[in-house]
Image 1: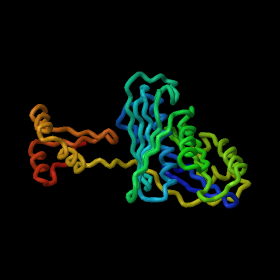
Image 2: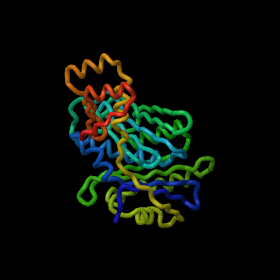
Image 3: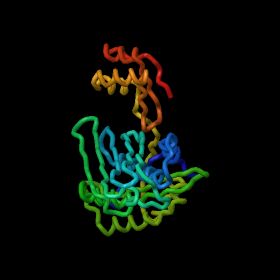
Length: 292
């Protein structure tokens, strides 16, 4: 039986190729629970979540990665942010009618895939690639070929497990500074491509790898938990309010009586009244509890 919301790394002993396998259900549900997205938007957020988890696991440093789709279609923005600890959050913005069977290109229109990597130490990096592939996986493979020059394949599946929506994916990548034979990599990619959604979402990682690569020598490492975690806080909201012009804040207070700051990611509300604003301006920490 599969245990979801875990990322597994694995390595082929006879090839310079590594792999990752992730499945998510609870994390995906938490991202969706405060929103009423059309089904195709839920689907693309699930695929983005899987892709971001797999990409975050390729990072060799502490930090985070943001993978976002943006365009002029009805889905103007879909974004997942993940950390090296596999803590994920995400949100989408919909600005028009979404057909039930909408494809990636129907959803996003003329758009881009933007990948932003922010290490805790070192320089921020951003890569942008046009949506030339028909699927998110194809667009990400294109990104890797252009930016990393590392042959990389992604396989993303969505479906149901235990009566709940679930998503999963696998990534294969040639090890940096290693010369893997192209034919070997293609052989492993061809095997991986045969994975069915129900196998990926219902079998445990060891059984999935056995089903795909039973003739290969594969080392499977201990899994890493994947979880929803929002980084919003009352302190961050206070900092944002402090950076605004005082006249603007005072006008909102006069009109509304309080300032309601809402987190798009998790749905929390943080309320600030005139006393809170006075405390913020004198550098004190607002003491009122957050309001859910």
